[in-house]
Image: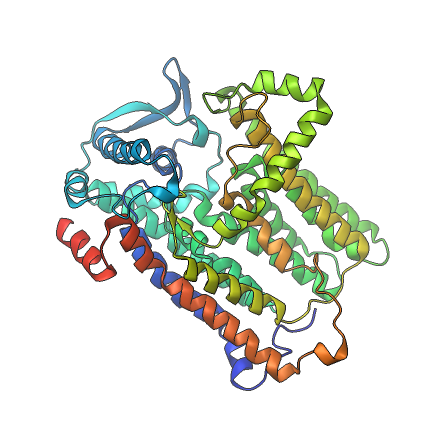
Length: 494
């Protein structure tokens, strides 16, 4: 692959070399604010993710199945804070069912003060967390360390939550920095992927999604290194790819088609190399074995479903009416794609905090300019492109099918439960490999390399400016205060 700095010169080329550090500074700044500004347990499923991390922090890798349900023991005061947060969120949703109609003040000072005072009690009781009990431990380790450290130093529960969020964000950002430093291709597009405000909000949470996208980015870059050199992946690269893809698929089983990405370097070679083919095949089998082995361990826990859904009846409907079900599935997927694409740029909190329209405009314009005027990736073999497209489409359809079965009532001609964050780990495979091609332009419409480089920088600058506005947006929507006032409020309460 050619260098990602091919369209730049002078200052722009030096900036290209420093893009990993630009990412490091911007991401650390924004995430440091979001770790504290995001109200306690206001990220998607953060309560159940935290329960899983607290279990792991005590050295228990598997949850327990009891008559009460699937879960483990959690400190009583931590549970009280979780319940207070869920009550605040439930009241807000009951009053304003539509996310875009919810007021700017999600949490007030009185509610925060009640949650801020709680300390670890030292007494634990059983609680359920069936959905997160299914997930393997790897992507939870930084958060579990943060929770455990907070308990050991006798910090308040909220301070321990901040610590868990901070360890998650630092781990995710360092992984992203290492990925950018390792990648010599189109760093500009990968920078946008890692700096999406939606992703930074997930980085600054207790969710396993904090590390999911950086892990997928690193796996894609390791694969791109071998494709760039026109060779099979080395043993060290394969070990990293196997570990990363196994973690991603274990965290979200519908990502199973992503496992076949490990075959890309072999499929891209012009001639067959038997020894390398066996090595990559063993790597694929290892991923499937690791994912399948974990699934067999937690299979008896069952699957969390929407109360209105019935997976058994829905499966019967799919088997008996395959054409109609396929139509519902495709229609439901395509219907939500445009809104999920926009939400993937910036959505904070429990998928209900949105940026002003001009921020979305800046993000979209910056992304288009940066990707369009960025360096062109060299072509890969049609077999490799076909495998990539099949992998991406298969993952999207499998996600839709899983949500259709476990989260959509029988007979509803839609797919419920899909969220923008589910698609984020697919982005690096779209941006690191040339699975899409820019249309051919006549000579008189082509821009000089110098002008392309300036437009590329302008797009990246617009994007970063919009990203830096994220803490202000969080402060306004969560507390109806500006950033300085919200910071002072939280400092006073802590």
